[in-house]
Figure 1 (spheres, rainbow, N blue to C red):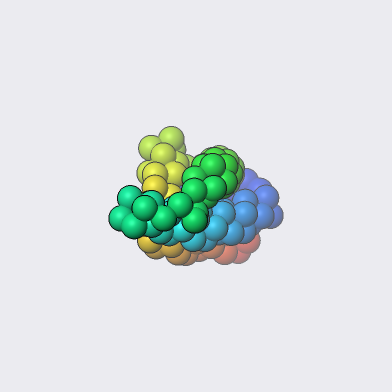
Figure 2 (figure 1 turned 120 degrees about the horizontal axis):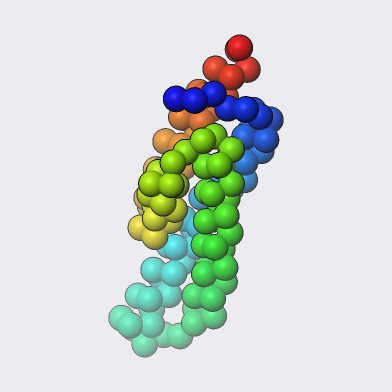
Length: 112
């Protein structure tokens, strides 16, 4: 893999990504709950949630792209990480995997 040019900026981007991955994961679980309530029980208590969730997901896309550009990912990897925010629980797993990978690369960059 190519070296990270600005480790400090990449670390900040990773922190932002981790926060957004967790937030979008929780938001997606709330969205699933909203859908179960609405279509399974005709309960509209969470009808307000889809729009905020959409906004949160867009911020997650920005966080992923920001991190991807800072650490030199290709477009394909960025898109796959972005799509992880569409599958319940997957964003939690992908966030852990990405964090381990980027933190390892950051340690290597700082050791140089």
